[in-house]
Length: 392
Ligand code: PLP
Image 1 (cartoon, rainbow, N blue to C red):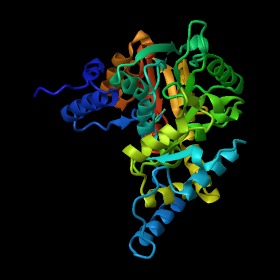
Image 2 (spheres, rainbow, N blue to C red):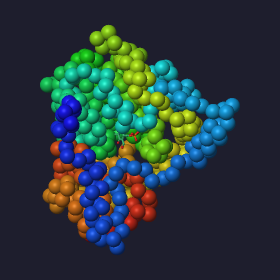
Image 3 (cartoon, rainbow, N blue to C red):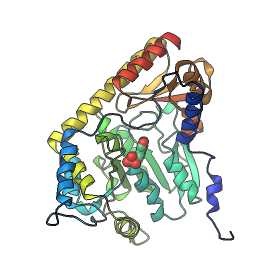
Image 4 (tube, rainbow, N blue to C red):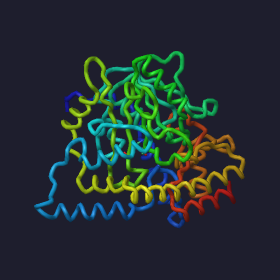
């Protein structure tokens, strides 16, 4: 062929982190079919959708089977019933949103990557380590990237540095992979910095429902955030929607640059390139935020955090340094024995048949670290903890 292609794709790392993990696990499983492998690697949930959610989806399905209640294309920014439920959820943190600031989508991953459509050639600041989609989606558009190191000294929470200039800053709190969570005063510092420099914060709150301490669930709890931040969130981890697909992005009316409203741009972008989330799924998401549905979400989250507690107790007993596991389903540990991340991955897979995620896959500052997740079943987590206690 002779067409021009987007050659920025050549700048991406050879394989997406989870594909490489999958490849190594498959190779090991094929060679050792008798071994039981426990997966505490990929951040997928294991508990099913709750009864309030599935009841609402079944009812919505029945409506779709009847001409008098059938729904065709959904509004590109989501049905008002779901945006109202999301606005009520924010009101529970003391945040007031208008419905036209909320955009329902098929998940946070697509929104995070698609937001690059709104932005020109800015300097992009990305925490290291962090969820890989921020980096890869910006490499795909050939952006200039600066990494913000997250390490033990800053509690894995990068803060504005004196040499940071106007740009787009990705923040993830509670953080994937480190489990670290920003305090109010730290976020206030970010918001003040962004307003002072005319920067944009892209705040990923995918794990807000896991917060149990006194930390902000939303950047919009912070004074001044409405003029400098967009927030992306998801039902994936809150309500087990990883396979059902629903998320939302909040773009405040007050965000304006170069005479253009980012809210209007996002509406235009979504209505041009996206055809909405299915009625059935949106009814399920609405049910997840109902009092009964949200109680079920919290029950599942508490089950996962029980897994996190078991892993943390083991690491404490072994004297292995770690962070996370309090306000996030992730535990970020220092690889014991001076191993690097992939060496420790191979060791756990081959000796203990446990799959985790090598920290180096989340950025160069993740080298020497390892992520375990609390999303396994209780039985598998306890079995993994037993193996770690005996053999690590
Ligand atoms: N943001 C973070 C920090 C995540 O860890 C994930 C998924 O693991 C996502 C976004 C993607 O969420 P969704 O399933 O809604 O696409």
